[in-house]
Image (cartoon, rainbow, N blue to C red; front, top):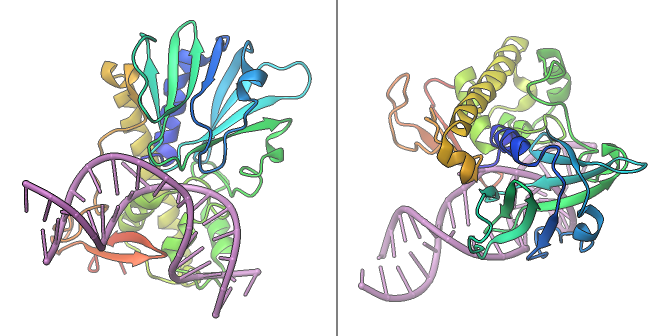
Length: 275
DNA sequence: ACGAGAACCTGTTTGC
DNA sequence: TGCAAACAGGTTCTCG
């Protein structure tokens, strides 16, 4: 489930395996993803040292050592993407292992059954990326605050659920954490974005940060689990308050959780607790 | 300009 | 039991 906390967990998990390592081999097994993988990936990156790995919104950024301009490999996990760490390289490939990074420490395999994931080479500054250019502020940064939200949502008729998913307004929220944050803030997902009072925006802002922070902590603890580190990165269990709980009792008032579809995506909420 | 819906693809679950 | 439909964490594009 690659939303922001999962990508953060993936990035943290990749660091000990890839950071300051030379990329000995980059194997491209399948290139026809959501956007085709660049065909010259191996040629451009093999032999280079990885300087660091960062996250921006739901994107992972692998920084490579380069002579002149910065060189970055951006990756996105799509809906079903995973990074699988393999310390015994003779292990058979899965049919959905599309890209394989190999260093002295072993392999990292980009596995993605649905192939909505993709990578992009960024030459120079991050602004050169077609994906990073239009992004709104990071939800965990100081730039996300009630007055920013007031400006971003002013006069907007779109439901608050849709606005929170809009990466140009806030970068990194996905379907699960939007549902959870709206529940925690007591705000009904169908409300017009522009109708939220400053008091509500303040609470929403607080809950967005709290929900994401808790999820990152859960991911961090799962990283310490040996099975996680040597296997799949970025997938951990979480006890959702409303997400995926249609018909089950609200954990606050015990009335059944409702499910509606907004912009073709499921929204879960409690009609009594969220107004 | 804005918002809703479709498209992209595969695997798993649900329902008849 | 078998098969088809529904559904799944994302982003981008088109259309009204």
